[in-house]
Amino acid sequence: MNLALVEAYAQASSANLGAGFDVFGVSLDALFDRVIVEKTAEEGVIRIEVEGEGSEDIPRNPEKNTAGIVAEEMLKCSSEKCGLKIKIYKGIRPGSGLGSSAASAAATAVAINALLGLNLDLTQLIEYAALGEIASAGSPHADNVSAAILGDFTIITCRKPLEVLKLSLPPNAKFAIALPEIKVDTSLARSVLPRKVDLSDAVHNVGRAATFIAGMMLNSVEIMGKGMVDAIAEPARARLIPGINNVKRRALEAGAAGVAISGAGPSIIALVDSSRVSAEEVSLAMREAFEEVGVRSKPLCAKPGSGARVTRKE
Image 1 (cartoon, rainbow, N blue to C red):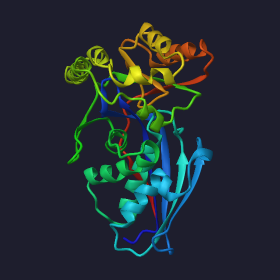
Image 2 (image 1 turned 90 degrees about the vertical axis):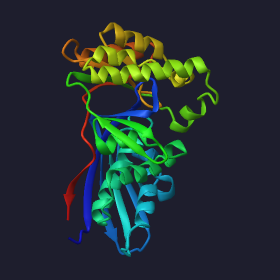
Image 3 (image 1 turned 180 degrees about the vertical axis):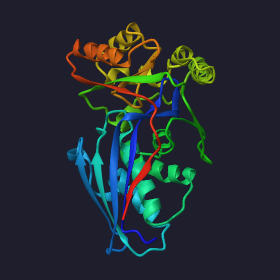
C-alpha cells in the first residue's frame, strides 16, 4: 500500500519514579501529542509545523527539533526519494517533566515507520525515538520514549545494546500529578546532577528501585511507594522547583504511597492506591502546596497509558 500520509499519537510519560534514574518509565494517559507526517516531492527535505501547548518555544529547524531529528535519521533508511512534512499538535507542554519531547519523537517514529514501510521492530523504533531526545537533553535517552512507544511501565535493562522490559502495574496503581507554571530546562536539570556518587547513595538507590519492582510483583502499591525515594538526582534538582519539599509532604499526608519529581521536573508525580485514596484529592493537595509558595499549578490524574499508535492512513 503506497501511503501519502500517516497520523499517530503518543501519550505523556514519567521517568525515574524516584530511584530509577534513566531506567524506569511509565506511560500516562492524561495527555498526548499527535503527529501527522506527509510525503513531499522535496527529496531529503524535512519541514516542521507545530501547534498547541508551548508551540511558540519549539524550534522548526529539523536539526533542533525532536521530531525532525528522528525524521532525518529514519529517512536515511528508506529507498523512497521523498521529503517529509511533519505537523506536530502538542498536548504536552515542553519542559514539564511529562515526556513532551518523547511523545513527539515516539509518535513521529511510529508514523514514519508506517508511512515509508520500514517494518522496524519496537526496539528499533525506540532507538530512533531516543535520538530525538538530543534536541531537549543533549544526548539520546530511552526511558521516556520506551514508555511512550510500549505503554505501561518500562525498564531499560541495558542501553548498549538496547534491551527494554515492559511490565504492567497493579490495576489499583494510579498517579496524581501537579504541573506547576514554571519551566525546568531538561539540559539544565541534567547539568546539576553530581558527576560522582557516594557508594552509600548508590546502594540506597539500588535498594529503593528493587523495592519498587518488588511491590509491582506483589501487587502492593504501598511497597512500590517505598521505592520512590531517590538519594542522587532529586537532592541535586530540588533547588530548581520552589516548595518541592512541602509539595511532597502534602502528597504523602493526603494518602499517596510515594512521591517524586517527574523526570527532570518541574512536575511532581505521586503514586496512589486508588482502592484506598482518591488521586484527585492528592493532586489538589499538591496544588495547594505549590500555591503556598506563590506557584500556580495544574492538577492531573492518570493511569498507566497505552503505547504509541497509528490513528490514520491515507
